[in-house]
Image (cartoon, rainbow, N blue to C red):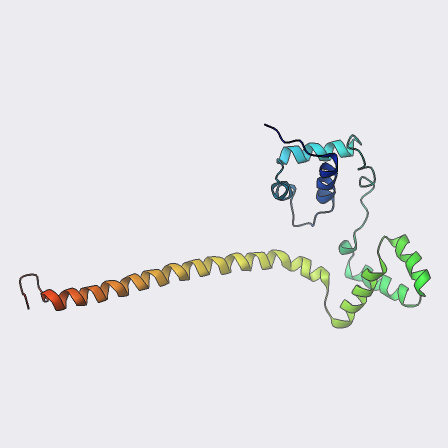
Amino acid sequence: MSIRHTQSFKIQAVEKVLNRSPQTNIREIADSLGVGYSTLGRWISKSKKHELKNIDFMIKTKEKRPQDWSLEERLNIVIVCASLDEEKMNAYCREQGVYPHHIKQWKADFASGQSSVSKVKLQPQIKQLKQENKALKKELNRKEKALAEAAALLVLKKKVNKLWGNEEGNLP
């Protein structure tokens, strides 16, 4: 029995694919939505052919997202906006495709010495470290169980020796 998805669900799924981060692939998104990979691919191709309603606004030339801006570009826009009043800054931001709060955040990042670009680059390393940590915890847990079993066997051996003696023929 096939599941019928609403048009709005399909549109949201395609939007999610088009706005995904560089580290996320389409198969992961399909799995998270509970949709087949090929089904999601079909929806994307339909949206590109403008067969999926209300998706036309998403299929433009690929605009640059705020997180895709390089540090140099961010610094340049922060410098330009520093001399503008709020109204002119809002107009400039609309032209550039960013919001004023992005510029304020970038300015704060530069002032504090942090950068969200470096956070994005560190994601694969963080993921790898988490996997290593998980593997080490698993191994440590296995070794602790083995040690507990060995200790239990030693205690039992001592009790048996105390009850029946050291050798099988020697009774207390």
